[in-house]
Structures are given as structure tokens and as C-alpha cells.
Image (cartoon, rainbow, N blue to C red; front, side, top):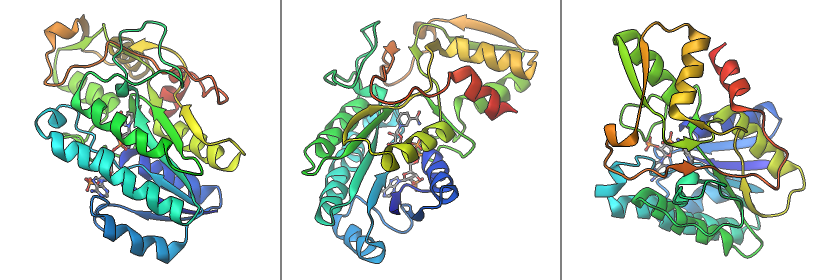
Length: 280
Ligand SMILES: NC(=O)c1ccc[n+]([C@@H]2O[C@H](COP(=O)([O-])OP(=O)(O)OC[C@H]3O[C@@H](n4cnc5c(N)ncnc54)[C@H](OP(=O)(O)O)[C@@H]3O)[C@@H](O)[C@H]2O)c1
């Protein structure tokens, strides 16, 4: 298939680019340097160049705390630009795949959130992503809305101020400090960008119908549980201390139990296995 990938040098985008190439697809990856998707007219040219059969949007305003004070910038990229891409994809009858987040939900429901749950965000990032989702779902021939959560991968997350994923941050802190404190009252599904890229490749080539998909590694954990696993696997010496969210205040409110339930797609492997692979 001919695939046009936006956000190809981001953390997820880099793994998507690699996975598509490895699977034998023809992929044209672009990032902000080539096409700033917040300017609608920019998009048309690149569509003419490749005439895509599949369009993937792996861009995002991903600085969750920054979005609280940059509401407009978050909405322009996470919502308005999604509309431009969805319209351009519809005009050439291409499949449109858009990546969204567990943060469209409030995290108050301990049973988690399946594909039919209505979004209700608790921070600006989540609100802007929920607004973007609407443009995918009205897309005439149907878009693919992929929600995922707690991503990590071997490429750096460009939208994050320090660029390091949670795993690398933990290892760095453990090597620098005698004690590391990690939140133990926020729960989610840690997901490998490599596994997600493989699942998305399967989604676009496997005859799945358009709609909402929750693609996450299986198993619920707190950030502290994840840290414990890293400590064990890497033999880290620093003391690991569980703390509550109130002891680690952040600018944006975080959902407490942001667990995506996948009822429509073959389950991805457990997060511990994916993490072991990443660390090996
Ligand atoms: N990270 C997570 O834990 C997580 C969890 C759930 C869902 N998601 C979603 O997954 C997607 C990918 O996330 P990620 O962590 O891989 O993000 P990322 O590393 O920040 O990558 C995003 C990419 O989008 C590019 N971009 C930003 N503004 C652009 C613009 N105006 N035009 C074109 N490209 C632009 C960025 O380029 P610059 O670096 O030049 O800005 C960057 O390469 C996002 O939609 C995010 O909301 C992420």
C-alpha cells in the first residue's frame, strides 16, 4: 500500500515508518520540517506527490502540562489540523488513521473505558484530543480512530520538554540519586510504540472495518508498578519509594484510572513482555 505518514520523526511515527517499510509498504514520512499541518493549504501538495491509499496522523501537541497554558496551540494541532487531514484523505478516498489517547477519559471508572464510552477529559490536552476525534468519526467513508496510552519507544518523544520516555527517565534518576519517588495511585496500560506500530500495520491491512480501536499492551499497572519492574530487570540500586499524586503535583490534572479496554482487536502481549524486549 502507498502510505502517507505525518509525524514520521516523532516517538511513535519513527516506529511506524520502520514497521511499514519492513512490511513492504511504500511509505512517505513527513514531519513538521516538510509540512506544517496546521496550515491547510500545505497539505494538498504532499497528497498530489504520493496519491496515498492510507493516511496516518501520528503528530500531536503532546506536552500535557504545556497545553494548560497553550490551549489554542493544542487545539490547532490536535483538532483543527485533524480536520484538514481527514478532508484531504476523504478527497482521494484514502483510509485515514488518527492516533488519540486515554486522556480523553476522566479516569474515574475502575472498570476502564471501552471503544463505545463517551469521552470526558479532565485536562486541556485531553479536551483537544477529544475535539480532534470528532473529525475522524464524521469522515464519510469512515476513519480509524486508534486510542492508546502510556507510550514508550526507542525514539525520543519530541513534544516532551525533556524528550526522555518514562523508562529512560527512571534509569537516569536511579543512576543519579539514592532514592527515587514514583506515583502509585495512577493506573494505566503501558504500551510499546513498536508493538503499537505492528498492531496499526495489521489494522490497515487486515480487513478491519473503520471505527474506534483501543490498541494497548495488556495488563493494568501503576507508574510505581512499572518502575518496580524496571528496577528488577535492570538491577538498579537506588531506593524506590511509592508516593501519592498529591506528593507529586503537576500543572495538568491526570486521570487516576485511565485504562483502555480493547474489545475489538486481538489483544497485544502483556506490558511486562514488551518492556523486557525493550530493555534487552
Ligand atoms: N506519548 C504518549 O504517551 C501518548 C499516549 C497516547 C497517545 N499519544 C498520541 O500519539 C501520537 C504520537 O505521540 P508521540 O509521543 O509519538 O509524539 P511526539 O514524539 O511528540 O511526535 C509528534 C510529532 O509531530 C510533529 N509535529 C508537531 N507539530 C506539527 C505540525 N504542526 N505539523 C507537522 N508535524 C508536527 C512533531 O514535530 P516537532 O518535534 O517538530 O514538533 C513530532 O515529530 C500523538 O497523537 C499523541 O497524542 C501519545
